[in-house]
Length: 248
Image 1 (cartoon, rainbow, N blue to C red):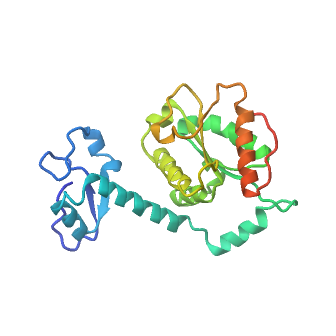
Image 2 (image 1 turned 90 degrees about the vertical axis):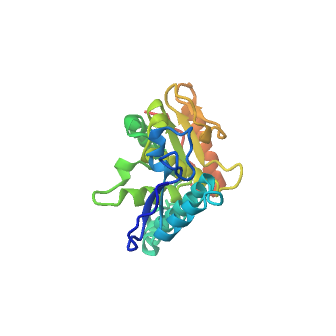
Image 3 (image 1 turned 180 degrees about the vertical axis):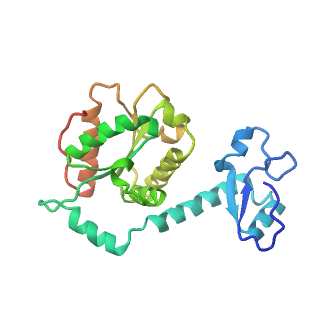
């Protein structure tokens, strides 16, 4: 981590968790230069805190700083994603059908390179009565997309994570979406179906998602198996049961 700025008026300091230089605190020689410069190795701290953690790297290890960062990000997500009271009232009026049951909310997490496949999946889910969330269908011009995506993830009943060679290698917001989904999954009871990895090509499943049974689109019955998972989730929550469908 680089030293704190000397300007006492600085309210925030952008710093490294593991130092960029060998002489710095928490320097990790196994870390590549690209990783050292990445957002994953960055942390925002107040001026005094930045000075304190650099002065005591034994107490403030890299693992401790990463946990503090993750905890702060989760807290911000909860605050940002909390629905406005008036929005909740509006949702009450539109989220239920004549049978009094609400639609199952399913978030589609994917890389932009896989957009065409997810459009097709969105249409199939929508036709089956699922309230699927796809960014290009749900985001409106002028909306804060970061806030809207975090809020949609928070309110989702299940998250389908599309895995491909593009998404598993890509850095940026798709990885953040996956991390958010994993954080929210930890809040659900053991055994609840929340994260559904959907493998769309011959990529490997990341370790962070390996604990959940995944589906491969190359399987001849993947549509039926996916629908059974969503129907099981709807039954758990008392939501409207999705209809049978075939992917377009």
